[in-house]
Image (cartoon, rainbow, N blue to C red; front, top):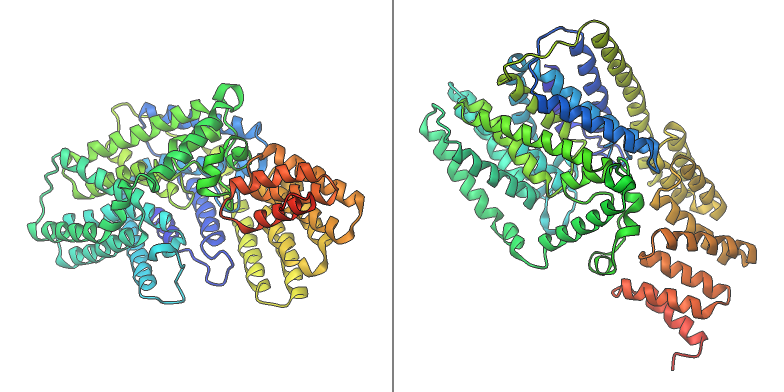
Length: 583
């Protein structure tokens, strides 16, 4: 039940009392429980039969990601992941280790894994139904009525449904009892609701491609016709419901164009990666270099309000993190996982078919999204189960003796650290949730308490700075500076620092403060030359310093990059008035 509990908690670990109720608790459970499972399972000797692509792929991937993390601009987050994404080197390691230990327990854990997937997607479906019904307690309020489910993000919900829904269908097709078939059918129906409710076109495409591949595999499971007909009609109904959303894929200016724009920026970033791309920028470091490679048209079309930290393509994201060697290793792992899934499709075993279809669907949708710390560990557990069900001919020496013990001790130690850090993260997150509902002095204190609980988390330094606004600009700058001591290149913290420095210069009217602010903004514009807000702030600073012509140039750039924004135009109009150009 270890693996089943991990999978189920990946769906249901939500903290209703937290500020980020879909984040800290889930990752605390996944990391602590995941490494704990690895430590416990490695101590049990078993014979694993692992294909060469698995051993070579994971070895190459983890080595190249570790190398890139060591040379990146943000080593700490390259190791543990950012507070938003959590996908540093340790999470990649967890995925590989979970696949490794699952492969040695495939026969005993297959049934619990399948049922936990079905139960998880059923919970996601129920949550989605409640969202669509307008229940305030679970509503996430995404555009176009899309549901985020227990993941808090429609794309994440769609990805999880793509992986788990076929497993629920497999339960129906494999069931010998009506009650079992009914339970699986309910889970499958709710899973379809989660998939459609998410509005995730990538997930829908993934499921469609996987279904086509399954058809090409000529599956012949021995199963009653009624459940098959029932699920087939349900699938057609879901496609009809999702039709308007899928139709937008044909819009030349819609999601397809957006993804192509993202990929182009990512490919330019790879062209400038260290060692001709053999070494990547490091896990979680794309957010730092994105501004150097984005072009004007991208900014005009998509804006820069959000921090872009992913290229929305699984393979390209791995390349950006670890270089082309890492991308090749991950491609080998993905193709290998797909091949194992294909072999399972041809067996006719409905459970293996369901797991195989889910793996293929997830890998396809990932090429329109990115690896998810919330779901990828589940993916690799399923892949491990499929490898164990259909192993290669040559067995691999079991991890016993000193090597196995050492690895188990390291995994257990990591699990303990993850548990302590996760509990602190949940507590800090709740402090922030309480802070935003209180008066300013109390809010500031709670923000600082959150920082003290997780001083390594840049998120709490940033939020604490915003919560301390009533204490003055210097108090805010102090908290931002503490955050920069942990991640000196983080774009959100650097942008916040520059903004606060300009605010202080405007308050004090001190030439020295203005020089400091201008220097910071010039540096921000150097590393991120196409950020409209930075250019506008630099223009304001230059205007305050009397450099009106230079200020006008920067403000014109800001207006050109953000033609729909009012504030850059207003500041440009004021500078032109001072220059006597308003007539």
